Length: 602
Image (cartoon, rainbow, N blue to C red):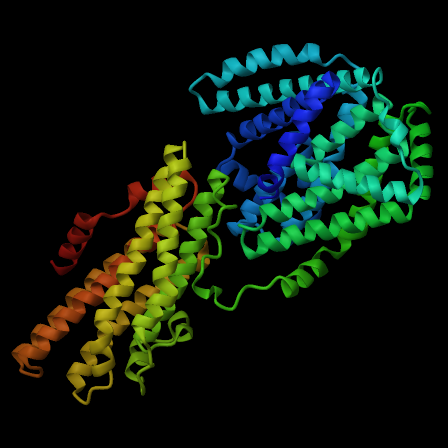
């Protein structure tokens, strides 16, 4: 958003710089190549996202120390804290990790990004890495042209590395050439005035470039060419850390409430780290000198000393903040609260969760659980049975028979506020996500989840038709009519209870096989109800007109229960493709169920 506002001004400044200085043109071109290399690296990494990443992230973030370690390792690997932040916000928005784990990843990512400074200062400026860039670009582009998703991902990664190396080379050459015409070090500002001024410049540069890593590379290459002083370079590095939080805050605008909390946590961490670095600058510089001497860094090698300083103040920030992650979670939950009207609003599907293929599917799955919970509340109230009763071990027939009042329920109002809007948002999100999917498996998953959402809505609509007579006859003085409607209530409540039991067992507990038993019980209960109804008609316990109403309502009840079972078979099934295929092969179809029931009757 800010880039769009400042874009015309940036173009004017760049055009003027290109006109007056060929050296500036080389530096800007090097920076552009470097940034494009980061984009290519991110594209390559995204090619490997999927269920494997989901499992890895879940296992690597179940403890605070694990999430911090994951943040360090992943940022070191992909050399992009922005990508790690994007993935973390996406998984957090989809409900795959909790806020504490997300904060741990972001904290670790801050330390992980310091490895980039070491690579550039220790290798990029001391070796002619442009020689390695050319082969990487050639092999990378060849692989990008292949049809295989994996090969293309590797190709993007190699191309990204080649562009990074090439960008560093051009920035280095540009700053070296700059010395012949202009010495920027003459504009150095000393003391705390210089620290705050260059911190502001560093934050602004990161805001424009949308990458603290790119800003840091720019700082290191300028420092290596003696275009900025060591003291000012330190301030620029601190400012770059603050600037990257603004990028995260802008990216979290479209995220879930936990995504917004994560962005605030990132801001708090970097601001506190920056304040510590400024307040204890002299002791930190003494530590840098001692560490540098201890590991053999030369006195005049200020680029490597900058890398030491960057690592040191981020490490101190991590040591200070890590013990308070749980308290920070509590603070953020109080500061950044869910809007009062959010019950019927999406909790998991948003722009952040659509960025990564695996999280797009899981966010829909979690949102469907949210939709089902709303539908569960509506249906249980429509049956005049408390959800606690349905979820308990109490005999449902006894609970239905002991009903003394009909629970008040405005189904139309509830549907508008808690079902319709949420269902529409899910369908719209799935349509957008399918347009971005290159995986046939994930696209099929999204289609199945779309059908599950429709199943929930169909069950609610059938409940709307059933509720009119249920509320009228559940307390009927006619014992036969009351019994038949209680049987209908028990039939639906039994399905709800079984779904809740299966939901509590987790997705890998033979869900489809368990639901087959529910479907068998459902069909059997429906036949028994029809048999009882025929008996009451023959014995004239109920009138033909009442029998017609009960048959219609029995059909609505069956539709409710069957749609709920179909929804559960999709929503609660095993996540792994192999396990799901095995379950589906063993599952009964309608013809199998009919054969089983026929054998029972025989």
